[in-house]
Image 1 (cartoon, helix red, strand yellow):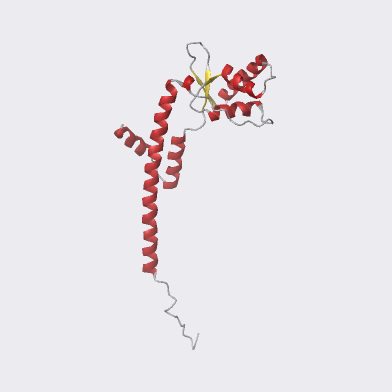
Image 2 (image 1 turned 90 degrees about the vertical axis):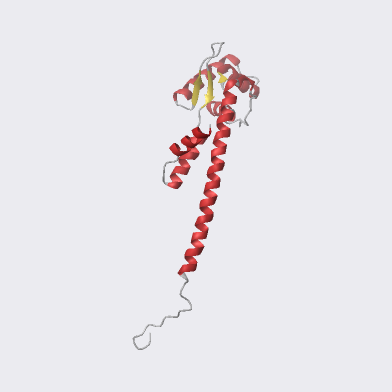
Length: 177
């Protein structure tokens, strides 16, 4: 400050027009990327729904994916792991018991079956598994309920965008079908 005057050097004043142009370019790039991701999400949801329909037709033909189960895992956690590893397949209590017997050859099959029944019923009451209608043999089976991935993705995108996509995507999907 000299004699009450403020000296401003115009060499260091930012170019606001240039900054706005750069930010606009970045915004345009991100919007295009978001649209591309939205299309990929839509395609994944369609693929998942198509595979789910095929899997539900005859899940007894589905191979059983045996998860890695730690020896110190609790009984309920072992059942959860098995069902989570096979989300498209339903299991009867006997089938779950048989898989668990592979890990412990010396377990009493009858006692293990009782524990399996009780655990599956409890998981059903806790809404972790869904009860599938009894087949021709009259046995009730259970499938991991988990979360519908498509719904979770749509909800996440809605939060990101601050608006509702569910109706729009559902309408778009029904038009294409």
